[in-house]
Length: 410
Image (cartoon, rainbow, N blue to C red; front, side, top):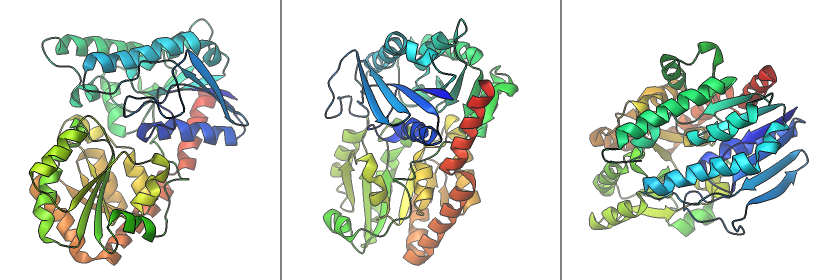
């Protein structure tokens, strides 16, 4: 098949970009002709990645059967709703102008559906006899962006209504809609999306990066954590993660002299968290900044326990952060500071403990309990998570499902 992949995010961007990047590579390896339409890499800093300069479009050939077209956009991922909105809209318009011909030349289109503005080029590509497209819903819009602090003031309600109407329109024109959680599928069904369109397809991780690795003594010495009990938070530092409370837990854990806490990542809340940690005089915590995505598996291999957190919110009960899959695939234990489907996966897998979101006492207790049982017992939890990942969430299973969905709509 000729398959087009439409995503604003793509490697070398970290985090969310793993999903379309790995899918494109995997489909090409299966013999499909894959064309990616994406933007110039600028997440999460809002600055173009090294080696890129903005232009109308840029074509790259990654490998046999896999081509990438990058289209111009306004680079920004700051706090300003106007600037972030311009980032989203500029990609949608640019992809509609500079990527439409490539999208329409495919047999089917897979759409990374976040932000919701990607509905513009996907709908235009499918009209008037164009190929059908499947939207893979990663974030529930408009709910997720307002949870993250997007938009304030009197116009927020009107903006939410407009975005909800836009999302309904894009769902109507999609031939299939894949959801990363059962909860998202239920919400979309309640909002009028026919059940026949909906599929549950969990996302995957990059198994070339996330796998069981040996302990890297050189990196441990570099970070000053050799022979320590390491708690790692790696991911977005923003409003949806509730990390101010995590810093309070870090402060409380200072009596355990062998614990080191590493915070890797960037986002709108990074500098506020750094300043807060300094003012609280926390001595057991290091901020590593934005860690290279291709090197994330090596960092996770140093950890004993990983934190996955979401603030207490209606949306958090149906959201599953992508980093969960990387932790499970790496065979490391975790604490889910969350509820809903994320907590259910941790419970089913036996990979760690659950703490009520926002409850600082419960999070502190969970980390102390894991510390008290020792590294060997904690590593056994990680092995359980690894087995669960292989049986239920592996890359092959995810690509099988996407491939079947695209063949079906084509």
